[in-house]
Amino acid sequence: MENQINTAIASFGMSGLVFHGPFLKINSGFRVTHILERTKNISRNLFPDAEIVRSFDQILATPEIELVIINTPDTFHFEMAKQALKAGKHVVVEKPITQRSSEAKELIQLAKQNKVLLTVYQNRRWDGDFLTVQKVLAENKLGRLIEFESNFDRYRATIKPNTWKEQGDEYSGVLYNLGSHMIDQIYLLFGKPKAVTAHLKIVRKAGIITDYYNIRFEYEGFSALTKCSYLVKNAGLRYIIHGEFGTFNKSGIDPQEDLLKAGNLPVGDNWGKDLPDEWGVIFYEKDGEEYEELVETIPGDYGIFYNNVYDAIKNGDELFVKPEQTFEVLKIMEACKKSNLEKRTIIL
Image (cartoon, rainbow, N blue to C red; front, side):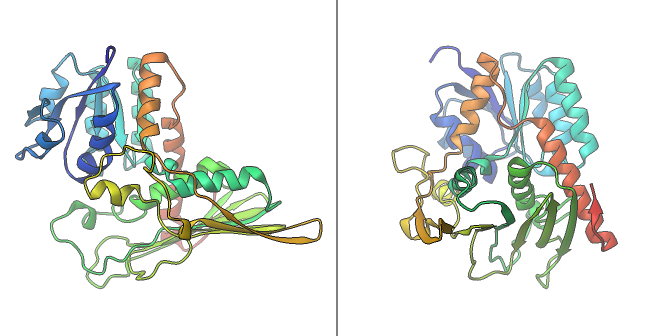
């Protein structure tokens, strides 16, 4: 394909192997030319023609590289993105964009100054269950919204050694990991909340980072809740939405992550399709009659993110994931930390 975007991936751990590499591999708009691996050559299997480099400076010094994927551990996001933007590269950063909102603001300004694109890999905007939630809310069968709840629970009782995700400071843990996805979803649906009350905990005996949160956001006339724990052996409902006239329930987790971890490329008509026994159910009342309807899950597709990145760079299309949105999400996450620390509701 002509007019491909020459792309470099700044690391090739789980993020590069599972969440970025497969979608760049199948997208004809991107040509992965360079991959940073400090000591290994894992990327050779997926990108045999890419040059493996051992330092980030080699990527910055290569003029033909147009786009850099910053998918390193969170602590490196700010400095590496800053260097890439200053070098005139377009940048995709893994979530969270940075650890501090002040750093995100600096990157946004730097991208504008250098007239390059900056966006964040909020791939769970294209989870099939979340796409379905958007559809259910748009159809308004539930009537006036009363309460929205999202849950993302896992069972990880054994702490994996020598992984950065199980170590660190106040910017580590489940709030900045899964929480950055779930809060982004709530922000995308409803905008900035009026107030936030957050409870953050370490529930595993040997844990040193936050592995539990229970957060409540207040909006005009309704509340939104999001919960996560690493000690839930049998997860319950994924989404629960209560409206004046009905309720929507959805179980299960989008299948894409498990498929990618199993080594599947994101292709074929069945990609991202949910199992029928995990479709949502809507219970509602209309004209005095009671209804119960199965809601088929819209297939998820993380590849939409990179389709949009291509169109934004080559055709000037509007970004789906705007860095200004991720800045606001970071501000909300900082309010969550403040709420937990001070044991009070924070007004935004």
